Length: 611
Figure (cartoon, one colour):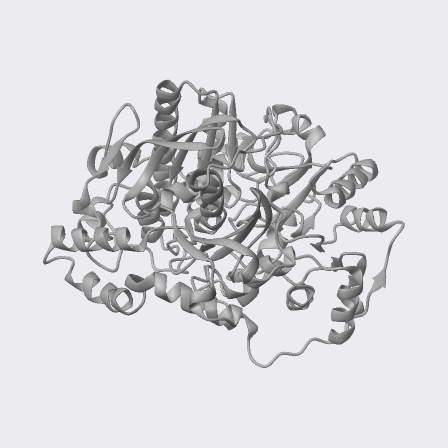
């Protein structure tokens, strides 16, 4: 039986398809529409999933939506009443779309699906609704390699829950307890994201990347004034400092007074206080995650933990939980945010609603998260020919050729196999480079990604060689764990360098792999495995044989504000717009100097809203 899962209408719309409990396909709508975090009905993602399975709507057993809109509407109304009259502005902004669409989401979904299928609404399969955190929990546990596990979900807010704990056993997922809105770790972190001038629901990872440049000078202030944090990790926010329940902003004048400044204007220069604020909220977040993890371990007695929800994308906190927490094994859903809810609700229907068994074989069921569209070399050649691209088809020595280019300092767009599901590029749609080059981080940030200079890059490392470079005692296939570079690979700082503050630290090499080593000697690691991505693994192996280094810089194939590329056309366009040196799409290799002159009307950067 096929079950289609859908997430939509808030952010990161997606679709996922399972057959008899096995994942067939999954993709985010943004990859097709080229609108980052696209919240619209995932028409293109649904079409892709059905095409991948070779089925039509008539062969679907159920269609499942990832949360319950009526319960969410109840929360909105109760919040407005509780904060009246302060919430009137927010009420006026939210109600039209609810009264027009979201309150009637079942009808809206059936209308969209029927139009897509070209049939009448009554001919569609039955539509089901899961709870938001149930979808998160199901995406984590049912896709995990564990027969039994504790599950912790942390995000902004679903219907009511902002943090929830579950116990998974076989095909059952039992809720244990939850923390409800407005007390939310995700919204707390987003409030500081907003205050430091980054975009909410998009810039949180920037705040995490900025934190190592600062000192946690305000951590105690946050604990004493903003959050009441208990020893077991549960917490309550002091809502006197926040506007997200009553207004269209995250923080208010009292929050400004606490830090003796207004929010930073987006795109303005960062100051040392911004970095110290980032370090402070990151420290508090890690403390909460660690305390909650220890409590969950004590209450459940499980050696295994699964994580999902937007906060589970905080790979620094995940790394500390892995190192310092009590769990023997931790597995994190690679599409931990709302996109993953599309997969979770489909799995929840299969295993919970229909009581179907799981098939656990010691590995997760995500297939490396390579669940999106892929293209044959013949199709790639057709697209490139239409674009007028000049390329060479390389078969026998592809990896040797690309490894040599990388060793020569070239930056390469690497487009291979199925597209990744989730926010991380994992060697399917990546920009790659040599991590040994001291200038590689600046080159990629400023000339290719067109983004802030402080942003760190992640290492992709052969799984079997990871321990030779990083303090990591297990796999990290989804780039969701941060660990330190081992001391033997580090470069000691001089007294003068140690006295530097903030962004001045940026250009001080911290290890023999300076392009992927953050200022605190950490790295956001992707371990690359031959069974899930044999082509990327083969390239890394060849690079290792050539240079003695089994690590590459791996960043997403896009520019700032753009979704990760999906098609060969997207890849070629991004390649021509940037200062990448080479593009490799399947077996087609092309050099920038060989390409025809690129022309576009106007400034293409205005096409994407900055994240």
